[in-house]
Length: 164
Ligand code: SF4
Picture (cartoon, protein in one colour):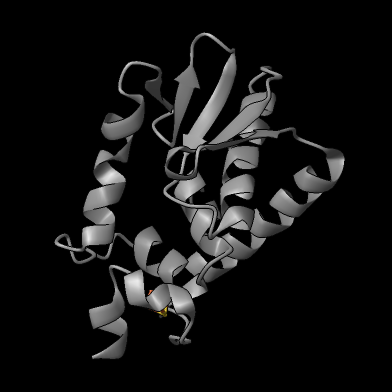
């Protein structure tokens, strides 16, 4: 099986839609005019411009560092997809642990004025390892999984591709 690099975005989508994992993993262009995507691009600037730095590790994992707190943080628009968000941050912690850095994470939801501490446990590590195996299986399929209608579809950048 071909080994494909896994990143935090793929982990996030794995808990939403396997078809989207495949489309993103194969660099299929999404609808760039989607309001949802545009908001996502600008939310860092809107709320946390002066508080964080963005880093790219090994050209694979993009993380936000909150310098004053020695934690990595991930900013989300809402708490709607909490499981995905928690696992995405956990993936960054897991990745950094492999590199010898043991730190905690923080999930920030500025529009709801919420923050949540994320700690990497053995159970989460095991779940991540299973998710990584499954993502690799999805990405190595010749065709994307068939679309399945879920609430996320209405905001998804691929909705035209899946449902028109
Ligand atoms: S539109 Fe729905 S089925 Fe298609 S990729 Fe997006 S979430 Fe998945």
